[in-house]
Length: 402
Image 1: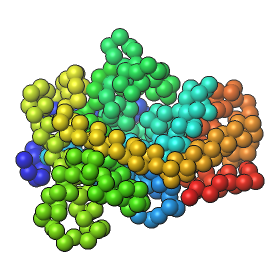
Image 2: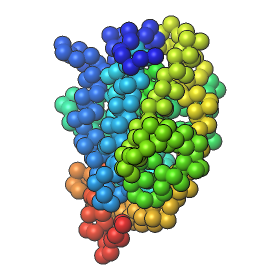
Image 3: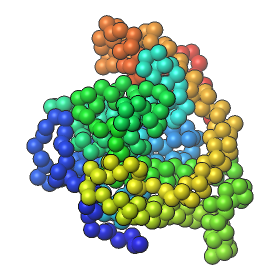
């Protein structure tokens, strides 16, 4: 296996036979449909706002920690690396990777949980559904349509990159098992069916596994930089890291602290990518799908970790959960941030005219469900710093998130 580009796989998505866009457009003479999708995502306002949205650490805690934007760029880079070797469409993989976190609210998962909690009686809040709302409705830049009018394949990848949303009987499964599929997804699927009961393309599966690779690796890096644990502490509890650190120390016994961390971090990413490539090549060869539609009906993801490596990652995630995501320093800050989101929602629900004119227009004439969704759209689009600024505008006291 080499890192050189391979010939296009028969089961890759083919831009020349894309299923098109909800609003038909003339083809571009210079770009494929998937390249146009990627470019529209990069030029969107929602993409720019990712620069000041929390990944784990609030933006002003340090310049070297990941934000949603830097995380997204890392996911796209990993996705292109995997797609290149597998012979997939690089532009579609990149487009889905770049769009996968557009719907995240400020303050990371704490903000999302807070929004979901206050929206419980109004349909809830889900960042995947919010990403779809952004690219199909909330971005308002183009003369002929709302949203970005992305291709069917990119939209499918945004919605289904983690797997099917319902089974053949129509019941929610996967991440929505035991609860309802978000209304935004169901509503759009009624207009432009996305085959919610099938797997997505290999390019979408590549974006999903690249997300796992990027956030596991960079959370290790950020946690070490933040001093939440040491490299030796994580190596003592996570065999995957122990093996990498052992090889680093054997080859470079005199490395300084920061280089030792970076060398471990980069080798972790390499190990993960190589595992995915070996496993994907074996699964694709075993199923031998004739085209991208056969991929969707393969019955399992074809781009994924091996069972053995998935188990090693589970051990790493368990360590990060207790030593990083539930670290008192992190949870204290995120609890305050969640309170900011809840208080913003409550105040704006009582007085929606306090929103900027473009958001508050006609909101008083809406029923409670539509009003709540408009407010959730407004808050979800905020950066961390804008959310804090709005809280200062509307309240006498705003917590310091440090």
